[in-house]
Image 1 (cartoon, one colour):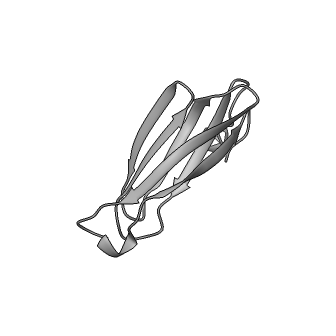
Image 2 (spheres, one colour; image 1 turned 90 degrees about the vertical axis):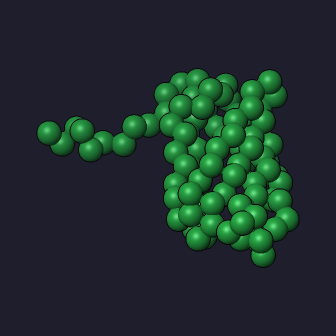
Image 3 (cartoon, helix red, strand yellow; image 1 turned 60 degrees about the vertical axis):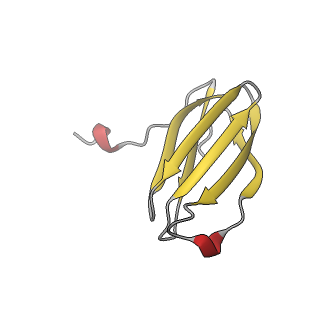
Length: 91
């Protein structure tokens, strides 16, 4: 069946977010979107895939990310910023 290999695209009312950790250190990401909070761990050389984040129009996710102190003390400090996600789009 060819259909099983089709990409799963975000539907109305949701967005997708992917973050690739290209370093050999675990990464911890904390995100807030108004009243919702998310916390994710991304292993070294790993991929985070959130395929169904609720959003209407556009949302700005405020994030902080830091590498595991034990593995990557030279990668400090914490990174902070904003990630924009869009309804029915993959970012």
